[in-house]
Length: 113
Image (spheres, rainbow, N blue to C red):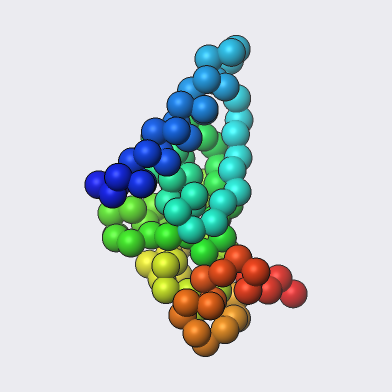
C-alpha cells in the first residue's frame, strides 16, 4: 500500500467508484481484475466501496493485503508467485498450470477446464 503505483491506482479507482455512487443511491458493483488490479479491488471491497471482486492471479505481496472474505473470489494458477498468499483462502480456486512461477502469472495461462 505504500508503493506509489499502488497508491495511484487505488486513488483513481476509488474516485471512479465514488463518482458512480454519488449519482444516485449506492450501487452494487462487482469487479474482475488481474494482478495489481486485484490488489486494488481487494482494498475497494475492504473499504466497502464495491460489493464483490473476482480476481485472477491477484498480486498480494503481504499478509496484510490478503483479504479472506466471502466477497472476494480468487482464481489462481497453482504455481503463481504473486497470488501465493491467497492459496488457502475460503474462496480461492487453485488451478493446475505451468510449473514456471513467472509464466503461470500471465492471464493467458489460466486454464479453465
